[in-house]
Length: 105
Image 1: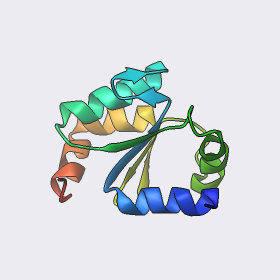
Image 2: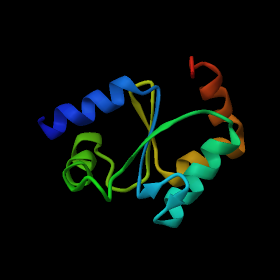
Image 3: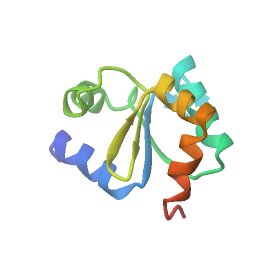
């Protein structure tokens, strides 16, 4: 499958999607670890893609998203941002409000 189409399908098929380094139980960088902690504190289920296992996605996603770093949080098909934005939104209560509007199963 074309990498760009794969990325688009992942984003489209998951209401909350985190592109990260590592996996939620064993993040491979501090930023990914903090992003997972923030999402977990909101008690939402989320999909993830370990970009370390998918070199083509790791290379293509920053160009597609116009966002150079990981993690990247996507909600309802829209890029929310990286670790700093996720943490600020959590602190401000915006992340929790965003997740309330999602039919998260």
